[in-house]
Length: 263
Ligand code: T3D
Image 1 (tube, helix red, strand yellow):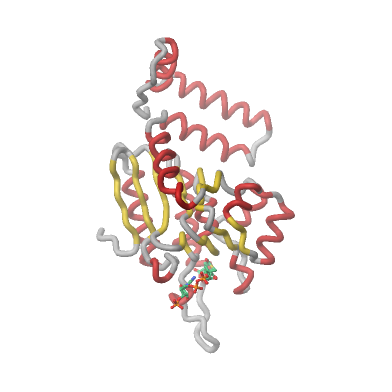
Image 2 (cartoon, rainbow, N blue to C red):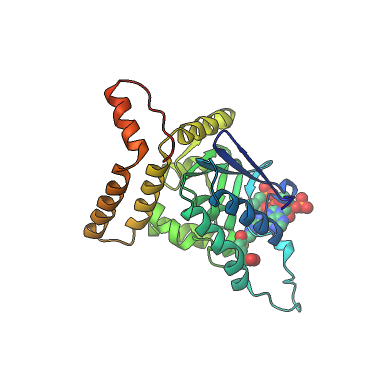
């Protein structure tokens, strides 16, 4: 498939997806969703990818759904937004969450509407200090989608989630980090180097272990302590047989840096 609205590159065990409609603030179209699905399926299919980066081109990360992709003028036939969620946004969130490797979102500018929540669906969110997050849905009569009503209360608590969702205020990257909504915000001048450092660290890490961490932490919000202890036992049992566990222990005992294979 030829990509026109995203850029997809894989190099040195790192896959990079860049949303590429900068003049429309990288807002989502049906075509962009199709291209994202295709790229994510290629990563899922295998190969040597150990970490995925999602970012945007230009001054925005993503302004959510492209509102000009819809004929919602008064008098026009109504649009089934449920179908759009079912076909596009729901599979995208689940694909990012289910990918058995770390997904980093590098928020290079404003992230609004579904753009904000797709960022929050990623495992580690790093943002430029000048970037911001806006739950823009309430301004057009919609509910936060793409997991917004799930992620927000879990990340920032229900009082802040409600305020963000009902007021649609712009939250700076610094504020988002202070609230625990994202991993960290970094000075604009240090952003590219910080993202590269993060990607290299994750690409060198024991990928199967990171995938188990991801599964275990995401499972925890629906589990009791007993169930979660079971999840940890089962993960540890599987990982105890892995090549990377052997390598990690051997490297520790030999006082050298580990060379993880990801398996
Ligand atoms: O529909 C479904 O399938 C259901 C799913 C919905 C999911 C959703 O995401 S709903 C929420 C959709 N998103 C929004 O409501 C956000 C709309 N955008 C904004 O509020 C602002 O653009 C921003 C706060 C993000 C940035 O503001 P600012 O002042 O930095 O930029 P701007 O001037 O507003 O935008 C620059 C251009 O991008 C402008 O076009 P122009 O005037 O230069 O020709 C603007 O119209 C365009 N643009 C920005 N966001 C969108 C967009 N065009 C289409 N759709 C957008 N979402």
